[in-house]
Image (cartoon, rainbow, N blue to C red; front, side, top):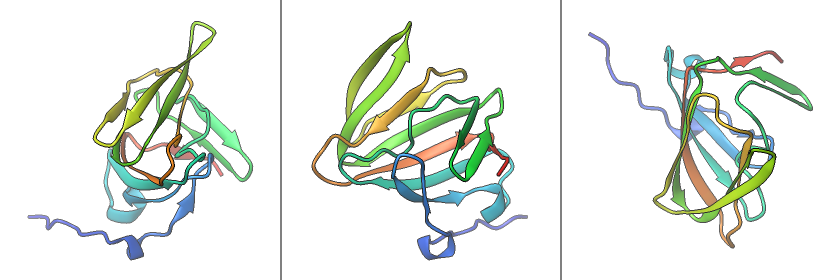
Length: 137
């Protein structure tokens, strides 16, 4: 039988995401030994984003590169604050407001997108992904 694991914020290093959000991967293969699930918390100050414009294929920036598995899915739960979800569809930028209590689901093959805190207080999101991305550097 396997016991549950409790992960406290102080157990996991805080990282800055491209876009300016800061947070922690609380459930991750490197933290708890999960096989398919990643779960974390990100705080984005007004004007910042949990993640910059990106697609779920390959993302490369200063000091990092990740490759997304072809069956990658993601969800954001907005726990506090509000913002605007932007995505590109048929060559046009589209947007929709999101607020506390909303959940955003990013299906397999989702369009290029970015969530931005357009409110006047910190936005906190809980995110879940499956399967984990491959960190190249």
